Length: 171
Picture 1 (cartoon, rainbow, N blue to C red):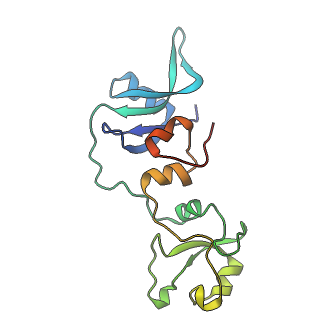
Picture 2 (picture 1 turned 90 degrees about the vertical axis):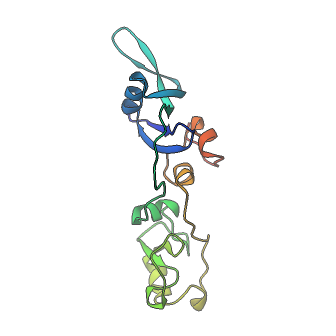
Picture 3 (picture 1 turned 60 degrees about the vertical axis):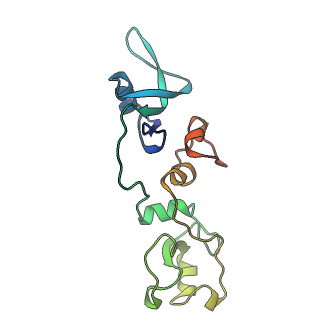
């Protein structure tokens, strides 16, 4: 039961991801409704079988003041697919400020990228343009839904209608 379940607010906006056990309890206690179940999987008791939840919707609207993705080292690595944004290496990764801190660069989603130690050292205290380096892709601040869909590795086919299109889907 290590599977994850997408939890939707009453208005069908994604809130979080929880365990199958937690989702089943919410449905069983009638605090949520089952929107989609996992294909060919079920939960069993001694004498009953229940569909395994994949997407649930809360019966009551929950006001969440901030639904953003927290800026952490781990989340930057996830966004950049654990790949150096300059050379494509997947070894000896660090974080790099595109515009160095000494030149006014902030620690933000749009200024931090994953870089290998070699590229980070080569770039030093300069902008990529100053040393003739180019980023593979521009750093962005992901929304919560896009982070779940594209970067967090939680993709499931049943989730797509609630998170939007995605290139990679976990069966």
